[in-house]
Length: 249
Image (cartoon, rainbow, N blue to C red; front, side, top):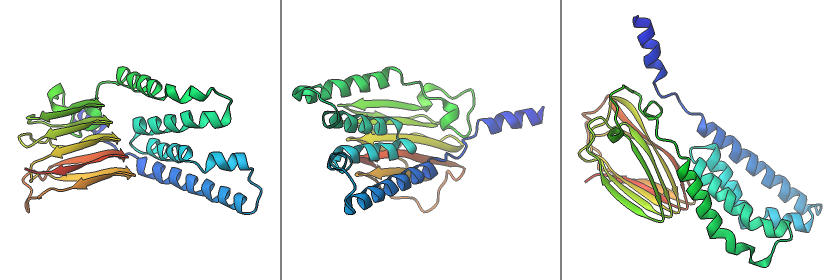
């Protein structure tokens, strides 16, 4: 009986994500391809029309999107890839001149589809010490598109969650909250937007946010001795053309 309980308990633990390795591999592939293209261009065997496509800001967005998708930023990465592909189409196919007028409607439709089919957060994915008593108030699941939000979170068993800010922002005040035992994960996806987290000074916080033309700053005044040594909040995600910060009151 004890063995079965341990097996169930281990099943609920957060397993290490291999996203950094995948991201590093994708970045290496992109750099390798760029080097090959530069080589072909310098020796004069790269057609001018191909050069115009690959050495463009649209392809740069696609490359950044691929790197983001290979890490913790599927939604921002797909958006950047979609933008890059959208503005490349007129250079590849014979499309009407006013084709670019469809940009914002298409982006809004894409974001709407993402929001509609966005699944509810699974506590087992974010909380290392998952138990059946974890409630919705112990998890964060915010989407901010062209908008902003400020929230005070008072959960005494905070398990993390996810926040997506696209052309918007979020401020979460966790000053009166308490971390759940073990490791809890907060996933942030910031694209042309940002997230501010206000946490107690005694919390143990580890940041694993990847920034691409953006940034995520740690501005905490950390206490010398942590009184929550058995609890840790891990901040993961991506900041693309955006960012955020962690601070204390």
